[in-house]
Structures are given as structure tokens and as C-alpha cells.
Length: 175
Image 1 (cartoon, one colour):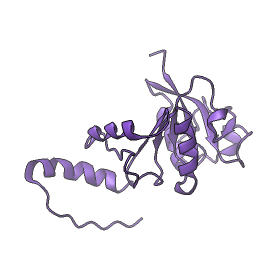
Image 2 (tube, helix red, strand yellow):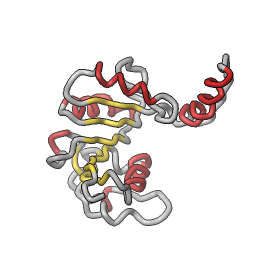
Image 3 (cartoon, rainbow, N blue to C red):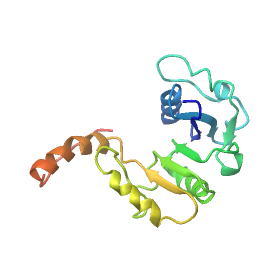
Image 4 (cartoon, rainbow, N blue to C red):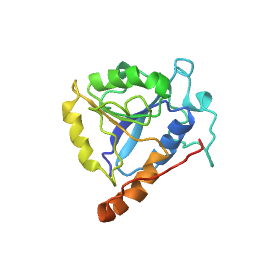
């Protein structure tokens, strides 16, 4: 596929951002057009700003990319998708700014998980929740994912619930 969709990765220098960058390295439909992070990292190369913590080398396609500020105005022309690995403490207003600028924002942060108009999606379980994006203000939208422990739990329980209607579950997590 030669016309891969350009995306900006917000919070690209952190662990979750690094994982997103690594997963997109050879993605058939998406390509990283920009990486963005805090003001502390903005203006440096991704290699300079990032202490790569994942197994293997940093993907060569991003090492020399300049780290941009987390602002929709900084995104390259033609980029309309933001994959956010921002910390929950700063994600809300930054992701809202991207949404209001017309971006499709996919958030990994906790900032939107209780918002009734933001779909909290596990695609294998509840893709129909994407209909909630029609209720959001602005030209763009935000989609969030659940907590990292809730995702595999939902995936395991969903088929059981469809078959036998699960009444209750007791779960303990140590994070």
C-alpha cells in the first residue's frame, strides 16, 4: 500500500509512545508523519529526546524526525489522525485541541474514560460504541481505550457473557 494514512504520535518519547512508534514501523495502512512530546523534548530529534527502552533498535524512520510540540498547529499538513500516548494529567486539553482542529484522536489516556460522548472501545467486543463520535462537538472526534487490565478481561468475558449472561465477576489487579 503506497498511500498510507499519515499519523502524528503524541507523547511519542514515553514508553507507550515508543510502543506505538514500534508498532507502526512497518504498518501497511498507517505511517508516522510526526512525533510530538513535551516542550522539554520539542525541537530535538526523536533519537536525542528518547531513551529507547524497547527490545531492539529504535525504528530508523523516526530517529531523525524532529520532536514537535503537542499542538495541532505543529502537525504536518495532511495529517488528520493523532495517536495519543499522553499522560492522563495533560491529555485532556491537548487531545481536545486536536479534536477541535478536526483530527481523529485515538487516546490511550484515562482523561476521556468517563465521558459519556467518548466511545471506550475494545474493537473485538463493542465496535458499535463508535457511534458515539456523532455526539461530540467540533469537526474531529476522540476515541478512547479502556484501562490496560480491563481490555483482556473484557475480551475474555464478552463471549462468555454472550453465551451464558455473566452476572458478576470478582477481579483483583496489582498495577
